[in-house]
Length: 397
Ligand code: NDP
Ligand code: MG
Image 1 (cartoon, rainbow, N blue to C red):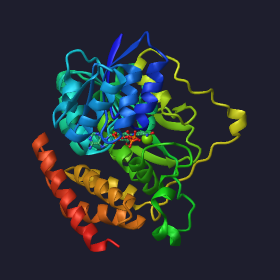
Image 2: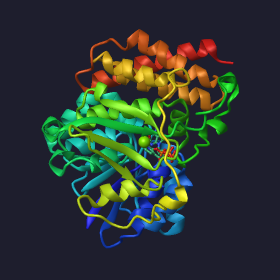
Image 3: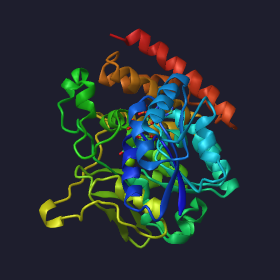
């Protein structure tokens, strides 16, 4: 029995995780769940999975959750406060933590799990990008196993030899030449550029292949998601960015590829459904059923590829610049982007202003030295957010 904490249980990855878990009651026990604002959903999950704890950061939602659980006769104990999420990640009873909170809010509990040497199923790419070397060192020092949930990184992981999968430093000896990171191109891949100023949040969130939370959906529309994934791949697999190529593949069937020195290219394919990488990481190194249907290649007929358009998707260049600076770039870029996406979703700025905000903040702060510890990461993150906010005040409509 693997005892599991699901951070971000009320989200899209949370739902897919609990769907897989529910298929294997003999293998997984839910120790704790976390949510934030969707308290009714969290209460329903507590009734269904009977975790020992449920954690929400703020006091008022926690009060509502307690009332709902009492009315339902559910004995799950509700924790709240700033440390409650780290508490359910680091508890000695926990074997594995699904890190599926969106954004920087997931850093503290994910880092707490890393420091306790837990198995980390990492969906929360923002936490990794913002804290980069600090996070990687914490996981390595404590012997935490980090299993990528992001479909591309999970695919790359599956295409690597077993002795390299969890050890970026072993990559050169494995004969890896390049990583080919696939990208769908999102909902605006072919939209006339002249229309980009008027696209709405709902249009940006209507991803052609994946059903996801709103923040990552907007990131997919700007392709900042692929930019963050480039940084994520660099951190997880230790290859320099020149050896990570981004290929647009609109069908999202090949989830990514690894190219070897002899010219072999290994790819992982599957229907676009996050339950596949989640099941892979939950059971690793075994395999379990995920509920995902078989890939029907004849019905699919064809797989297409094209290079990404640098004019349409400036965020890809920004991510490469952030990495090239070899400094605080990734942390600064992530913070600016979170603030800009929130402003776009709230209708305060136009779609192209997201990349413009990211670019301005990166230019101003991206060359700072890389923070040496978590306090430094949080201070830099706060400074970048505040700069992004003030820029947004100026261009808000
Ligand atoms: P959702 O928006 O669907 O879910 C986000 C989760 O985080 C919810 O449980 C939400 O709680 C919680 N949350 C939000 N803000 C806070 C906060 N301040 N403190 C604590 N918890 C908070 O996002 P997704 O599930 O789509 O994405 C989660 C992560 O996984 C992201 O980092 C994303 O990049 C990554 N990912 C997602 C993929 C996908 O297919 N969805 C694919 C690959 C990566 P509540 O809803 O209760 O407010
Ligand atoms: Mg992805």
